[in-house]
Image 1: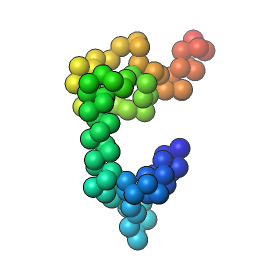
Image 2: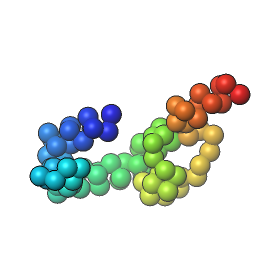
Image 3: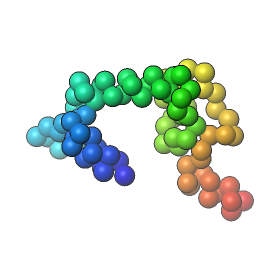
Amino acid sequence: MIAWARKDCVLRVFMFDHDEINQWEVTRKGLERFDEFQTRFASGQLDVRKYYLWTPAFKKYMYPAYEPSDKDMKRLKDYLNELLL
């Protein structure tokens, strides 16, 4: 999924890749788009709890009032482990 997202970002000119393998750079357009999303998360318009790949520190960066809770979406592996216990 990350590879597809990266490809989509390149196609939308949010990122570009270098000649070196695994080297990408965020464009000005990509930074502007990131700022737009960060504003929407910070205002509470978007919910950081839905993003299970994000660390608590990144969620806090995106939404300063964030505190971890049981409302956070769990990673699939963690969710399956809970079901099996």
